[in-house]
Image (cartoon, rainbow, N blue to C red; front, top):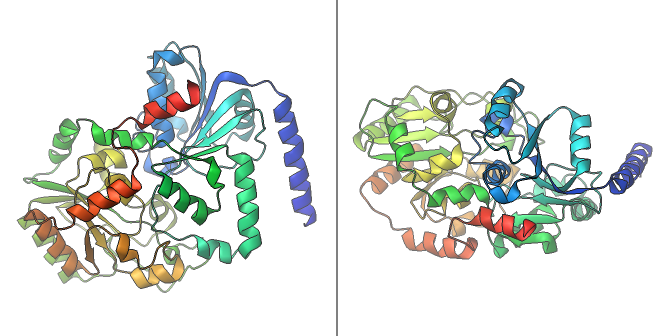
Amino acid sequence: MGFKKYIRSKCIRIFSFYNYLQKKDAKAIFFYPHDNCRFDGYDILNGESSNVLCLLNNILQDPKFDGYELYVLYYHKDRLQTYLDYVKNFPGKKVHFVFWTDKKSIIRAVIKCYTVFTDSDYIRIHYKAKNQRVICLNYFGGLIKGEFFRWTNNGGFKKMLSEQIEMERIYDYHLSISDICSKFIALDNCHYYPHFISLGFPRNDIFFKDNSQFRETVKSLVDFKVDRIITYVPTHRDYENPDREFFDSAKATSRSIWGHVSQEELANLEQILADTNTLVIAKVHPVQQSQTNVISSNVSSHIIFYSDLAKKIKTSLNPLLAISDAIITDYTTTVYDFLFTNRPIIYYFYDIEQYRATRGFFIEPIESVCAGHLTYNLKELGAAIKDIAEGNDKYYQKRQFLQELFIKYLDGKSTERIKKYFFE
């Protein structure tokens, strides 16, 4: 162990011991949402795609939590007064807001709380004490991406082992949507499997609500008849990100959301969208949006970028999934959220070999767990959209099989289960 690592380890132990000595309030909860909220605009007022924020809002409205102190990490300083006004609607709870860069205030808040909820295992509370519990609500439940490249290139087996030891110490619980997903996530991310519980994700409860009014609101934003809404949810590419090991400047050049395609191909797709009265909502990954400049905004009357849509109405990804007749996806685990609906899925694998070479897949061949149209270029994508418009749903049974395999609860009561498990 190097000198710096030794000092850091020593400091963590001392701080953890100090944390342990501090009395914890069983009715104090710290909520730590994913830092993607910085780019997606998710917050306490618009958090239906964040497990932490969904749970927070539910607890605010639950009289059984009157008398609790709630500490909330937030990312948008200019919205603080709006948040303070909002929580006045729930006088039974005492709510404190902590800005995400104010490290000292975060530490003070965490030390007071017996329970800490995070959205992601990227959040490492190294000074976590044994007399408090840290619960990762998680933000994915599938098995598409492979993380083994990351471990292989950063220390191999020893790194994987140290990661598992650290995660076992920091996190008391990890949530997932099923036992089989727990096993996949634990293996792929070097987590301690016995700490997993299959209670479901709060954000997915929205699929069991009436979202028809929101659908009509979205349709009213465009000046053409909308028969179907398709949300496009591409993930980021390591080879396009200058902060990633596999960055390739030759490939990170300006492209459309559909990859490097011709104007003729874009025009043909636009015609198909017009002929089928299809509105596409393109939700670019936050990493692509904030850290790379490769995606250009192609002009299309039938495609709305999520970033533009969010300026007109308050929304987030999961409400859009809830009103979508189908999705177009690639290697993102969002597909396991949409699987709750059992509606058509189109996989758009225009760069599958590049992705395979830089990030890889947890399961190969990846096609074996894809329950939808497999497309590799815009012509095939357009044909799949027409197929769905004509009502051809030949993948229904496979989706249903995967739904039963990967989702334990299809009842919209994940939030209630979580509250009952941890507080009753």
